[in-house]
Image (tube, rainbow, N blue to C red; front, side):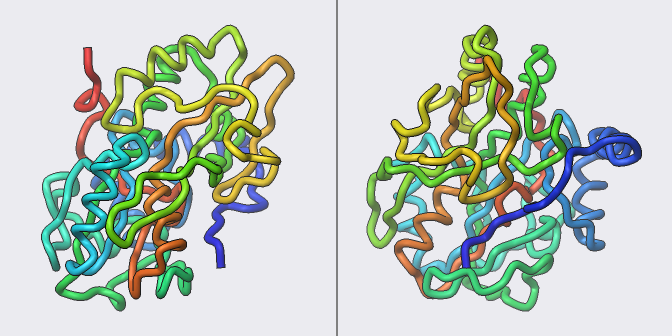
Length: 280
């Protein structure tokens, strides 16, 4: 089973748009509490100004390979923090619980997604190590503040993500393709998008590709591997960023006995500020 999220959702409008606007002002603790209590939504635009993160959780016996994979592939796998084996909270989610405070997870057994729970307490083991990986949602506040449209937020859907034909550097048992997220921008604003996001290297930084998706082995932008398609108006170019779902694609290919990730687009909302990852 390939995890997809938010299929069939419609653009936010009316009361939905007002609700999305209200969620943008939530504190990270408020957002995590809402997820703990059962709210299941993509997290783009929630707790605006606070960094969001991908998750990959593996047994300690697999953790070195994941760490080495991230070190060799820093663009899609920028590590913001690591929780020790069995640890369920840390500085990025003070008072939180990594087992309950993400809106939706994906559980893999032998590389196959076997469940998409909203709570992984029942899967938890004392040997599980959590890697908190940078997410491009973090720089979307800067794009919005710069006057650039963010299509999936405007259209009320999950960001589209695609497997590519680009191979990551292998590390031990971990091997797989680069995954990218895509945001379309007017051609006249692409340079601004590159300039703004390049100042956030800890959350994927500048795009890895602009324009023709076939150059990445992507055959149809209307059929993302994860998330939802977005409308691409005339005069807009697709812009692709390395994506923190890449470790999950490696898990699917490498088939470790157990791994847990966030459901794509359903991120950990952290207490870190976006500007914490801004470089001059």
